[in-house]
Length: 239
Image 1 (cartoon, one colour):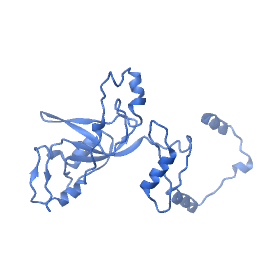
Image 2 (tube, rainbow, N blue to C red):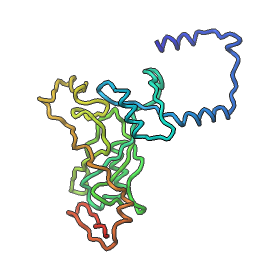
Image 3 (cartoon, rainbow, N blue to C red):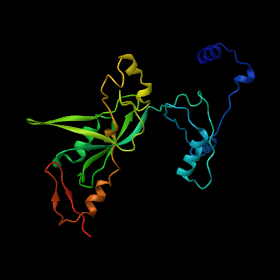
């Protein structure tokens, strides 16, 4: 239907009235932009039909705006050109040696999962705590990155990735847009949940969002004692 309409428009002969251009001022565009800033277009990722009433009630309670919220179903064709495939995620890089808890390593390891937005470090570029946090723009059409092998000299280590606020995803192929119950890859390769071991699982979820590194760095006492196994270090907070 869309292609037919496009071809039809190309073959149209405009009348004199239709050929008259409509000139708009920059102020009119600015007003339209100011109004559009109050709108939000969203995509709900779910294998099941969405209960619109429950969705409205939940989001109204979560956002808690002063002027209230109006929800409208725009249909399947509206905003069809908007790309919903990219989403920012905080990723925790675990089991790093303490010397690797820095911004450069965060950028390098984080780029394996997507375009790096920021690395959670203090003003000196150092991260503190149990994991190095990196915010990346992740492609939802791709499988989750479970980790990375780093090689320093003769030593090789596996660095597991854990994702904060990770929604439901497929335990078979690792894609967020569906669960294993509706996985096309699982059907195409003939595997099932009973015959093929799942390559992804809930262990990819971070237990909780850590405090920012700069908070840990500033709130830690300079007299605190370093603790840990040598792979990482943290400081005991005083009083």
